[in-house]
Length: 173
Image 1: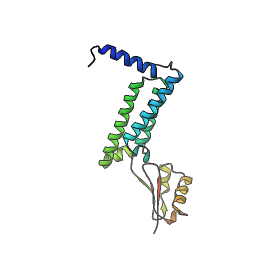
Image 2: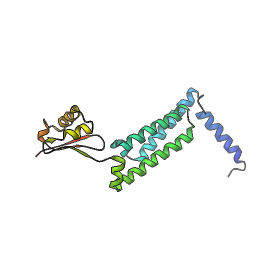
Image 3: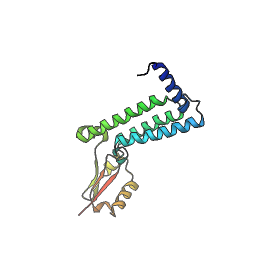
């Protein structure tokens, strides 16, 4: 421990203040230093949160990604305190990780946080009311059919709107 902790704190404040700046009056080099720090920190947070964050894009993933990007951008521009914003971003990633872990273990929580799959059609028949209720356009449905190599709804065993928003088509055997 330093004999003079106030000297150490003042030195660190000066070092970080010079390197990263404070407030909105940042030099070009301070903004560049912040960009390197925030990029590295954001990448680290995404790696720590796991592949799921950008793998599935459930509602939970999208909300956390937008919030994280918004929070980190404020630190980048100097409109929010650098280290406080980094701490808040870490809390967002921790909450995402905890909810993702809970959703993986508890189906009820998964349905609440991510939603449930919705059948849009079965046995070659489209549920037009379900399609319209879920705001799935005919073009979106046709695209999903083409991606599966199916020419018409009549050739399907099941059409499902997944919680991620993807339309899954299972062809009839």
